[in-house]
Length: 214
Length: 329
Image 1: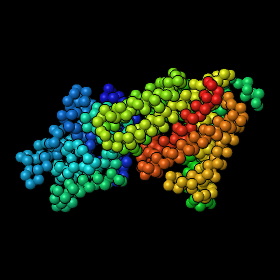
Image 2: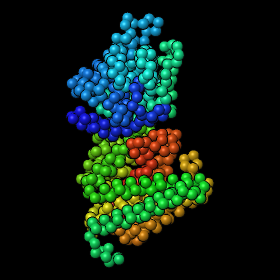
Image 3: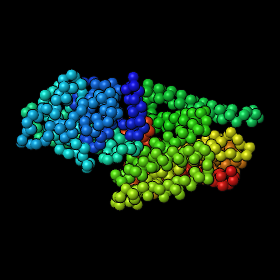
Image 4: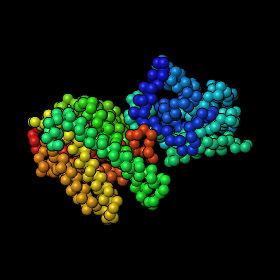
């Protein structure tokens, strides 16, 4: 009850500050198992994409949240678990560290919470850059997206571009300012037959960047 | 008829006014709806005509929303009206800032603008401190914003960034705050009827914009400043001024003005409004966008709001000051 009420208040606040506009360019909002992957520029990305999704999809879609930021105070921990139903991950560890050629000892360990969520049938929202970018261009994607796509071929991979959020709350600021933001969802991509890791990740990144001007 | 209207109390008179406005809207909407229905069954007009009908429907929708907003503002009293315009100013400023690139160093100034300047300005309006509210932004905020910016330690494009923010505040907050301020002006022998003054201003400015728009669609004229606006020319501008001032003069019976005074006041408001609209067009061209708001029509409903209110933003302060100066109220 309290969570629902807080959710409404938060949603109203986010809409008032940013408009939280969803633009479904490449696919309609649909209750199927999806992996949304988006650019990452601010901690608020999580809130934005949560607010942009329609009510029915919000409950079955779990975003990932950096544990060191979103779980460091009781309030934030409560919001992320009760409201966003988020999956905590260690920062820089999601998806697995991008060491090309030399895979880490157990590449699946950091992905484990995501795998569990997908096994139970939920959709997830991930930020394959791993960390927030400083420039407008997204950084190189890490390999977790590829691994998940291979493990769950039936999940639909939807690229998303979150626009303007870094202006609402730049790194290091605490008070957000009102600026219109939008989330653009693109046409689903899928891993081609025998497609290698890097080409796929680059293609996925291109798909996200292409949405900037869509 | 006239005697009957005069016998009503101010509140009843205003209610009658809204009744007339909504009645007209209902009639026009019903006519448009039936026309659209007939067209769908057996189209007799070409695509261009259909396009015009669609355009007219959109215009009608905006008019409905504006009329409803004013009615709610009036029905709930002056405080609610002030809050309403504060919200509109907030949304308009949000749109303005979204389309003016800001840097990290502007963050504190933006917080100041949205969460300090805007509420204070509207509180000053709500409490009718006219001496302070007319100088608060041009004097105090003009000074405070660049100070906040300078303390952020980012010299690049300093003047440009600050100028943009100052402009946004002037147009969206200062301009719009003068609309509810009209409600609080007290003319001797005109108590409780200030809502008519707001109605007068809005109707006159909207008429002037609408007439210009319609004339431009009918006759092709060479635009005077094609790089700024492809539609602005002196002939249609003059026609807009003339007709809107005429409407203003005819409306003089609801205002504290006499016939000639109403004509002059309407003219002043229309010149400020239409020229302000042109200035906002120049700003949009500078940013390389056709209209305020984001690409496409938004679901938030607030997109392109600045397009609707920009004429009012410029007309309201000038109208307010000329009324106050001339009548000494």
